[in-house]
Length: 196
Image (cartoon, rainbow, N blue to C red; front, top):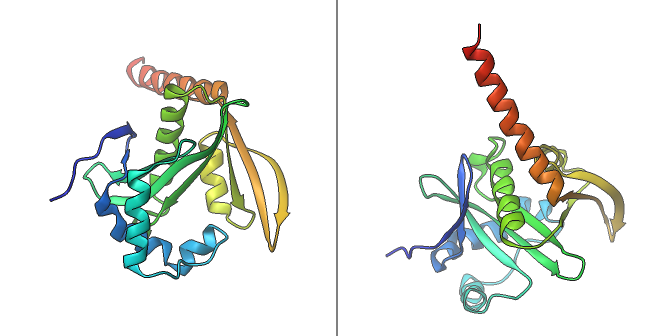
């Protein structure tokens, strides 16, 4: 039986919900996938499913204080990826975010953008975090476009080990200004359709 998990945010295409034990199957498949690992500048996981599940269950029962992880699911309830915010700095009021659409059938269809927007809305309405940032590989142009479409702007580029990264950020006020502008644009376009 699938356990119900609390939904924390909803977009137009996805819901973000708390992680549940059943997610372990997809998460293990995605963490052992070489292509997905390359997007995270890491290596595929090389431990057994049994060991991964033991660590997974422990983490579900003992969440960290400066990290929140969520499953991304379609509105029909299909688990297609994960997102999180972590490295929470309460003094500087900032946190890092990460997102992965593990199910390739949903790549390039705006599910990542919708999930990231829902995550930002959740962070900025339920915490006092003022700045959210992320790192992405410099060659991952598709991810950079997605992040820019969500309002992130590039801050700098840097090299770490054998990888080159792009640091991007968005601030609370920028996020809410974008939301207000989008609502205004939708309102204006409806008005134009009605007015002769």
